[in-house]
Length: 363
Ligand SMILES: *Cc1c(COP(=O)(O)O)cnc(C)c1O
Image (cartoon, rainbow, N blue to C red; front, side):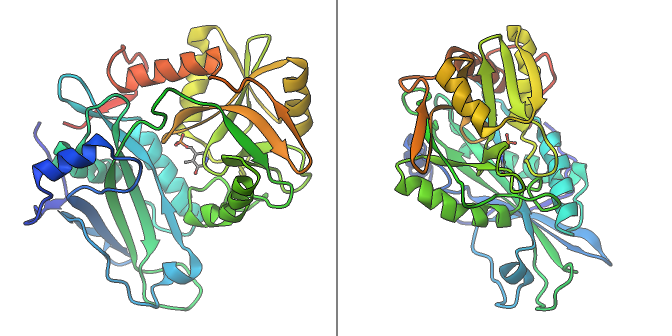
């Protein structure tokens, strides 16, 4: 494929040896190993986006007064490149990530990266490191674009020097024996987002605030934490990094409505579209903790699952809170979760037609 990339490619002189890369591909895990190259690009008000390069992966040299380290002016994205059986490599709806990256940047008073530059940066890195795309079942190359205030300044205002990076990491199957239901901890003490806050932006700060409740979840034998709204502490919002769905016995797929405090997931949006193929009605509305608890107990809610790029669909077997719990199906994923997961993966791995034009060929 010809490339009209605006990025300069400077190949590394010290790539990882093919045998070592093959070794990494045997069991890549998640986010532990990184490819040979990375993208960097700089922004200033005067020069706009400039100096975009694909170069050797390596540490950043940061002045201790770099603004992002103090005021967390940072946003990120997460998407995957999938190797198809014919050797081609594809990403899934990358333009949706590009637009979300712009919205996140806007909320954090960071400059907006034009959509074509986002796609160019991701495609250039994946092309350069295409040997790093694993080809085992349900493996992928996880791509992490991020942008941070790189200005050396302790004054509190939007940075006038910003850096974009894109790095990539081979990822193994999230579940090695098929999707297994997880137990979720309901945080009654902490919130993830508030009205007018940064909940709808994909920023590191939201994750920092979720780590303490996440630790409490683990201390209570749970895998993940679910957050409720901060005003009434009544309405279910999402997990620390995944959106939520409820399957009702009348064939309705219910998900908490967006409204500024919930991150608009690409997986969430794709599931809302795919639902029609299975004759499921969709309903984006408020869901109370009480509805969840009672619905699972009385059988009106037949499945609960979480979704996101990393794990695709994670069935939720039980909801636990201080002093109680409600348990649904804990042995295996429900039928709807399994169908939707299979359908999404079939499109992503090129095993099925892509009637929505979601796949983007990189190389
Ligand atoms: C990234 C993220 C999601 C999932 O979004 P996808 O685009 O589906 O990966 C959900 N919630 C939060 C808070 C997130 O950061």
